[in-house]
Length: 97
Image (cartoon, rainbow, N blue to C red; front, side):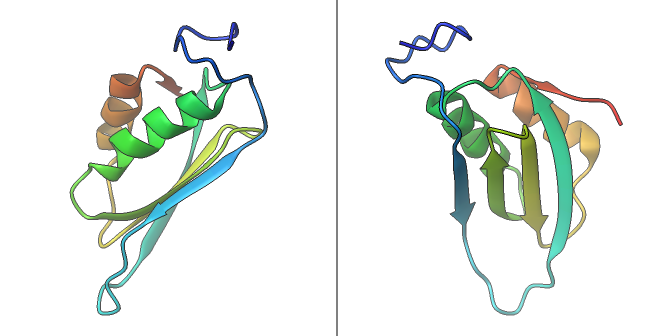
């Protein structure tokens, strides 16, 4: 069981990278990388991936648990405050630049 966070999952903390992609060959891609604190297991990664993927225009989300980085690819620039709100909805914190 993951005791490092409050997600309550039976998963243990592991190094994990996940990616969720929807492709549109005609869309120009914008990429931004954010740092997130508090992720300790696969469930944490899934939660952040799910919430950030819901942002309008986001085509891919790549979360690296080991580094705490979240790479967001979108059709147009996505505001930091929008990403922050999604990360907080998942239960984690965006690190201020």
